[in-house]
Image (tube, rainbow, N blue to C red; front, side):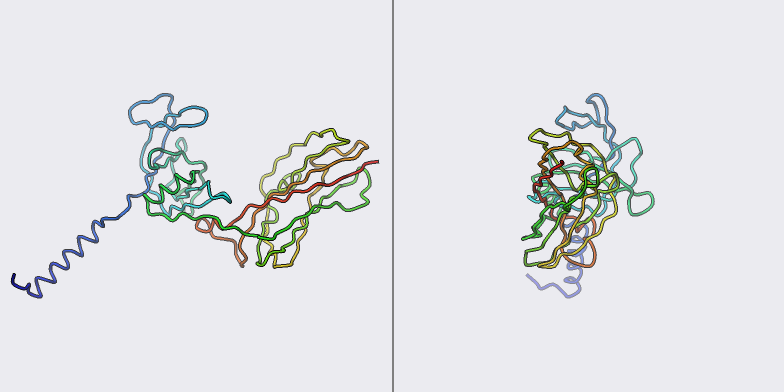
Length: 291
């Protein structure tokens, strides 16, 4: 076979380059997100959305171009995930739905996007769904990594509080581990109490009703605990949860729910750093005597 001339070789090389750029064999299809409206019955152009309370039928509409999709874990054991994506603003009477391998999932939340006229939507997925979607779309699956090894917490009440006076409960956190860690202080105290705390009580063995109160978030800080350091968090007043007015001996079960973050000068970025958190719970018991 005669050798190709240099000009012919260059032309063929450019042809192959153009083909490769225009249609890569391993390109993933774009994420399919559509606006949808719930309807009462199945029909043409509808999809079935299974749920624990019965199937829902949705009529899907225009495709919503999804930007910056991100998959991240929302549980310490990495069995629940969130898909986050930027979308154009959907009509007010519609919701966003994403197509997974085998089924459609409705958005669990929607909000204002980073630019005017845009929105963001999140979709709650199981681990199997997240892995399958990541494989189909070429997305990274961001999992949580344990933080706060050696973090210890204890509850106490200041001695000598008179009857009827505020009864604050103090949580002392101590980092007995080898590395620094940050924790979110606040974030659930915009209301009558700090709902990161919860309490159950018994007076002379009889259970007490727990008062209900809601919070609307709140300001929060991220203090850092170096190895060997400690920090104290004070609940507003134990009486915001339980009635301590009657004489007797009260057994109080205490609980605090918080989040840990890696050390650093700034919180993890959203959404790509959303997996860089770790939920922690501190439990304990106290005894209170009311004469």
